[in-house]
Image 1 (cartoon, protein in one colour):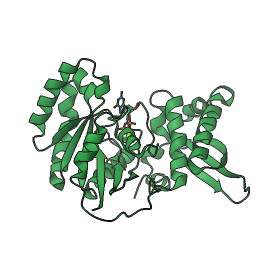
Image 2: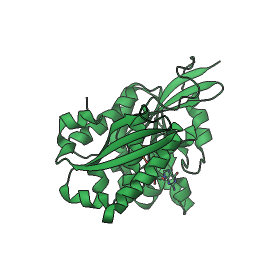
Image 3: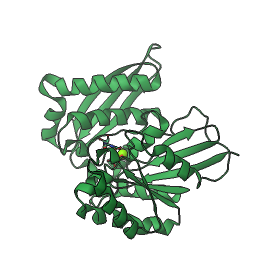
Image 4: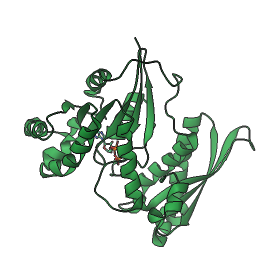
Length: 302
Ligand SMILES: Nc1nc2c(ncn2[C@@H]2O[C@H](COP(=O)(O)OP(=O)(O)OP(=O)(O)O)[C@@H](O)[C@H]2O)c(=O)[nH]1
Ligand SMILES: [Mg+2]
């Protein structure tokens, strides 16, 4: 008996969706950061075990923000539901234990659309390692049961790998029988160029303060495996929507860009198993988050 199916990972921003997927894969396929709205596309992660192949669909966090880019983020999150056999909703237990009033605001908008798909739903109550005062989990679980009676709740820590095996066992119950669709060593359907641009974007999340990363996009302009046989030459452009952000991205005497470049180069080299020469350029592109043509060019639009 062999199983094959898709699992959509959805939930509010910063809940730990990408962290959970990476945990199952044992490798970083989706980028992660301490800030909300890190993930911008639907990203597949393929887990192959002896008797099953599961394609996880990591998605952008579901939020109430407006704008063209945000609309695309929401669409790609919701569209994952349609192609899934089971839905895993991730929520941040530590956040709702500390701020119970946020629970309804963030969870309620998810309930109806998930119910409409008719898919089974498991709620991974994540970040339990951060809940210091364990008894505060009880009212949270009670409230969740009340809000979402059809769902099944499983406390986990995606970061520490607690409860994740239990979650996997349970979601396998909903995965249909079928043969594998991908080679066993394939980790994602995402092209390597896209993954490289994501790695650069992740480094920007860590090196830039506050709002800056939200108006930053990365595009790989050159991916050259031919010119040199000992390394891959990569040119990437970092787009920023605001002129005054360019200097911050570059940093004093280029220090920030240098650090981003070094960190990203190492990780891209690891990903492709080859040496990499990476050049980064920063360009200002005012209003790109509202420009349909540009959004399409960088893979954020239909
Ligand atoms: N302590 C703790 N931190 C976690 C856990 N899971 C995720 N995190 C942290 O939470 C932050 C957000 O994690 P992500 O995986 O990027 O969250 P996400 O849901 O993919 O976020 P978006 O892509 O922005 O929607 C990161 O700093 C993670 O390290 C957990 O179980 N425990
Ligand atoms: Mg994410």
